[in-house]
Length: 231
Image (cartoon, rainbow, N blue to C red; front, top):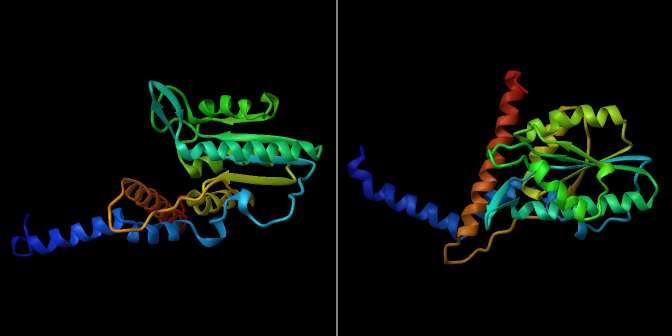
């Protein structure tokens, strides 16, 4: 509005950036930064041998939000893969005869009817995780708070194996936060976010770009806060 002589050039540049994001070309680059190659393979597709669980195992499942669908509060789409993987890992651990716990994290940052962790519990029970093996952490509002609130639980139990279940795009930031609290979990990627590149704009690509930017800003925030002593 103020730079009138360049108004059309600014508008053209904005339109080009929007198209690059919506068509997947720029959003794909952003996702590649948020999802480094080491965290880009879903656990069920990873070419690794059978996992050996220690006598005591903790499986931490990070929250990913909730939404209202047909008047009912349900997990957001990416969370279903996290629930399925957490339940599968618990089943494998139980078959090996160890003590297995699933720590479900997620408060209520969206101010919905219930916290994320409380909302996910019925789905985990339906997937076969016994209620006695569930630990609920429903106060955290951020990934950093997830790690901070889970740390006392993990350290008190003195687990031999610690697994962190979340989506690929969140894993890089989550690992930074968990290591900050003296935990070194094994990453278990539940799903990988992909974009579809082409000529036509897609809403899903814009959503992926927003997700990637959120994670990249969170990673930058982590390093800045560590530098000034806030984390």
